Length: 266
Image 1 (cartoon, one colour):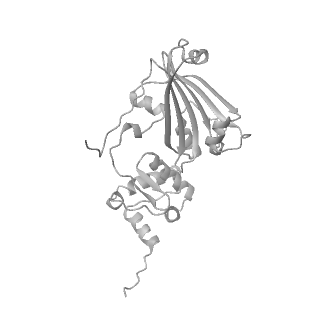
Image 2 (tube, rainbow, N blue to C red; image 1 turned 90 degrees about the horizontal axis):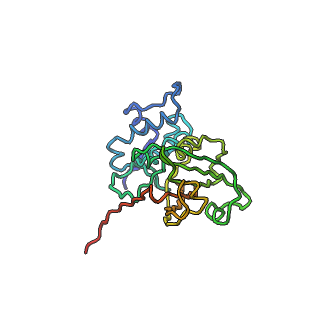
Image 3 (cartoon, rainbow, N blue to C red; image 1 turned 90 degrees about the vertical axis):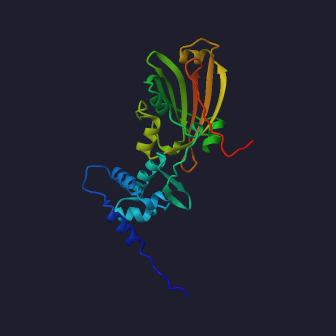
């Protein structure tokens, strides 16, 4: 019969952190979640974690660092959002595999898309209101039809003129008040102010022609082509987060999808 060996996981975790000189400075003016984020960035460069070892569980790591679990989770969520970590329910958190993926599987916010293309963006209109949800929003969000949702409308484009009209609705669970500075990148607001990470996007794309309302918003003629995109956004727990409608001026925007064919012969 093999002898039973008891491991002191708290001791091993502490030894690892001490060996790497990873500590939280509670007297520092730097916010604790930012210190924890930097600590995690250093920690996951170690070969054991690069090879697939699970990170210490949140309870043990938070206890060792003398920070709250919510503070630690905020730091972990940031690295998950950046694609450095992956979290599996019931399994744990580990370093993400470095795989080549097609652009069609990597969605960006509008601000990120335009920044990547080097296109400076101007906001022409910005309106915030509280709306009674229609049947589609009630089903998507799974909310009481009497519960109002925040509606954000934005007309955006280049300096010379607008080319997209966005309408977004948000789940009341997030906690948006309507007083936020929506000139900031939207997902920055959700992540930094509400600790909510937009993780999954499902999209439907179609074409339509501009009616009088859209023509006025996009400064184009009635009957001109418009690319219409519905985006259903979910958080890391696959809970509905945002329902977004995008109307793009047809002659000013190209929607590119790049896919790689893999594992198929013949």
